[in-house]
Image 1 (cartoon, rainbow, N blue to C red):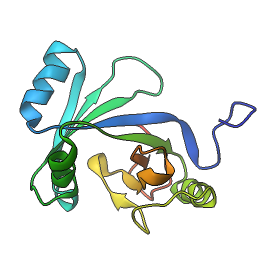
Image 2 (image 1 turned 180 degrees about the horizontal axis):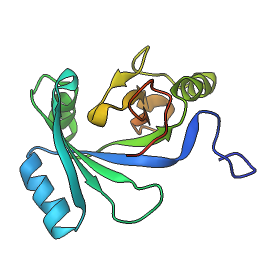
Image 3 (image 1 turned 120 degrees about the horizontal axis):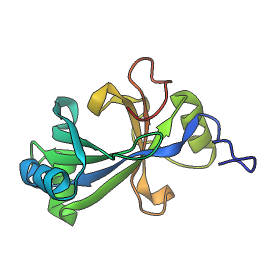
Length: 156
């Protein structure tokens, strides 16, 4: 947030979701939905990233946040290699972007390194760009914008 309480240019000022790498999506959904009480919104496959994704909605807050459970479809996918190296657990934190181009400009100006030159289409059709963890305190950060032109707001 800027000193006056407004989000920085291009950013919505809230976490859109937290991504968690899992080995068994169905078992993880059972835990997060049936035991921990989150509402399952959808399960989908993001073929371009070779992942199966479950989006679970937090029942409070405005804007509403999510927990995103990610299961690799291939051991050779980025997520498959992540699980093989680090095991299940926190994968990334996604920050909502109101204007992806402005958010990327701000991040690049701060010395952060996007992992793709242009936004990719992620779960829910959102436009996403990941930032290399070496510039973000070893946390994989995802910028995400609503489906459309990649410049819309953050969470569903």
